[in-house]
Amino acid sequence: MDKNEKRETLIKLAMVVKEMFAQDPEALYLYELREKDRMSYLSALKTSEEEGFALGKKMGLAMSRENCSARTKRKIARSLKKEGFSLKEISKLTGMSIEEIKNNKVKGK
Image 1 (cartoon, rainbow, N blue to C red):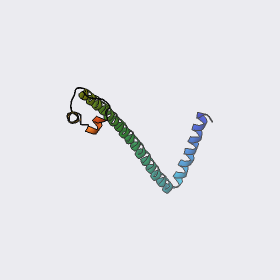
Image 2 (image 1 turned 135 degrees about the horizontal axis):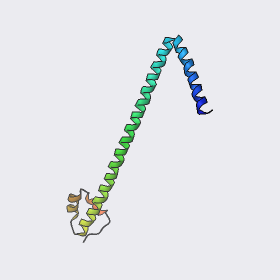
Image 3 (image 1 turned 135 degrees about the vertical axis):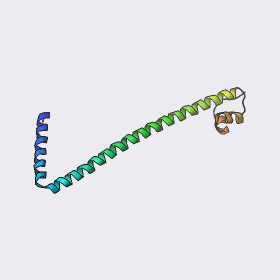
Image 4 (image 1 turned 180 degrees about the horizontal axis):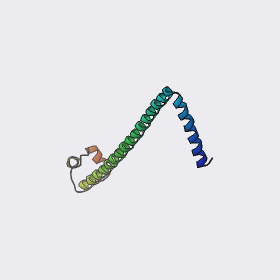
């Protein structure tokens, strides 16, 4: 079935449905209620999907920043360790725990 045939079939179906509703106003009312409900559901679904995508994007960016921040802290801690700063001083400056600094795999002076 090509596009034109499909279009004509849909138009014929719409005409039959229109005629059916013209004869039964209550059926038309119920149909409109169902359509409103369906459209409301689809709209809510789309909104939820968009919000979920936006939240995922924000979380991904935050995690990326966190990873970058953690890498930067480790790099700074290694530099400070090489310069002879104490574990306590490095901890204060970087916000890392002393255990994290010890596990940073760089030997100090």
